[in-house]
Each structure stands twice: as C-alpha cells, then as structure tokens.
Image 1 (cartoon, rainbow, N blue to C red):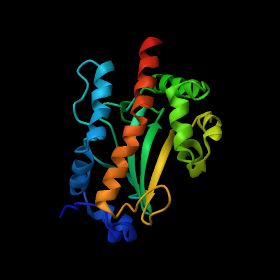
Image 2 (image 1 turned 180 degrees about the vertical axis):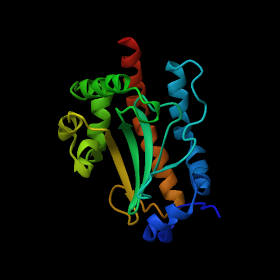
Image 3 (image 1 turned 180 degrees about the horizontal axis):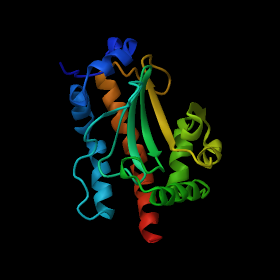
Length: 222
C-alpha cells in the first residue's frame, strides 16, 4: 500500500518500511512535491540549457541497498548539479548535490565542472549564488568519502561552505536545509503536509536563481 505523505510511523520504523516497500509505494509523496509551482520550474530552467531536457522534475525515489536512505534528484541531472531530496530516519533533506563518481553512468569530469563553478561563485560577493546561500545560512550539509566508508552531516555557516566543498575525493557533497520530525525556528515538521509542502516550494523558489546562475556559467565556459 502506498504512503500519501510522511508519517511518524514511517520514521520510527524507517529501515523496516524501506525493506518492505518499493519506490512506487512512495510515489504519491513525490507527486505532491512535483505539483508545486516552483519545484516545476527546476525542469523549466534546465530546459533553457539542455536540448530536449526532461519536463519531469523528480521522477522516482531510489532506495539504498542498506535501506538507510531514499533519495531523488531532478531527472537527467546525474552528471550535473542536482536538485536533490533525501529521506533519512529523522527527516528530509532538500537542496543541491554533486556525485562525482562513475556509478550509474556518472561523468565525474563534468560534475567537477559544475562543482568548481559553484565554488567560484560562492567566493564572488556580488553573485546570486553567494547572496542566496548567505541569506539561507546556517545550512545543512552532507559529505561522503567512499574510500573510507564515511559520511557526515553538519550545520554550516555560509563562510564555511567553500571549504566544505573543497574536500578531495568526496563521492557525495550536498548543501541545503533539513526538515525534521519536530518543527523549529527555520522549518515546520515534515509530518505537517500542508506546511511542509509550502516550505519545500519556497525553498526552491529562493534557490532557483542560484541554479540558473550555475548553469549559465557552465554553458559560458564550454
């Protein structure tokens, strides 16, 4: 049976739920997210720079082998900067990620171009990128070093973000925000469907200009 939105039981028995369910069981959640106005603009922006780019945004969830995590990224963006949403056992992350590996036909050289552009823009005080993330700081961030089987999550201030992304040989880098089970001063509870959906849409509204700026610089540097 499908899940229409995140529930307390889903998080309390997270690994068990993911072991029992397929990605289609979570598709209603994705449909609700995809229906939002500014979420849909992610695909529209990408189509400005990619010929025959996908019209869908988040097309499906992927569940990790150890059932610890489910995630989705905007369709077609495996080797690009990714708009990314992930489910952990204590809430949901949303933001932008880079996966510079060969897995799933990834193209690391291309991904590093997007990452380097993002880092350069973060150092330009006049860029949309730096202004956007300074405004949204503090940020939730993830890093995974496959060679050490080590992942960490942290809360970063804006002035710490550049050095965080500078890590060598990371196979996953992510920054954005986190919506937990309990509400806080920055975000509602992920269990509150109406407020959580509004928060997700407003987050992407506030970061779309950043996403477009990175793409514009990427095309200009080709």
